[in-house]
Image (cartoon, rainbow, N blue to C red; front, side, top):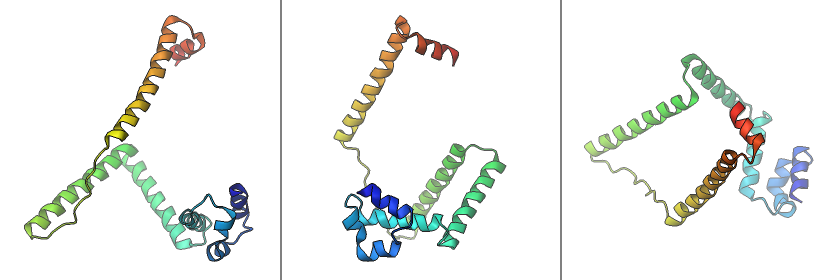
Length: 154
């Protein structure tokens, strides 16, 4: 039923206002939340140039970003790390200035990894590493010639 709903939306057989106003989305597609539908319609409006000023802004930001990347000659990861470093420095300076003028800053949430999360990630990595080691073992023993030649050629 959800696929039929999305096909109808893509073919413009269901108007956005009808879906939002009459709550047709809840009756046709129970697997999708209302927030998801509204965010989908906002993105669709931007992509279809119904909100031309937002669409124009997206294109301008993308063009300026591309121009900066091309002219600087730096890779994307380097520029991202530089921007994050500048952001951290600005936050550090802001915290020190707030301390000097005795202004209370908003507290940051405590970031904690639960033991359960770490154990599940470790178990996932263990399985992947064991698969790689098994493939390496098969290649070493000569059991998989095709993969051996792929590794040699590449």
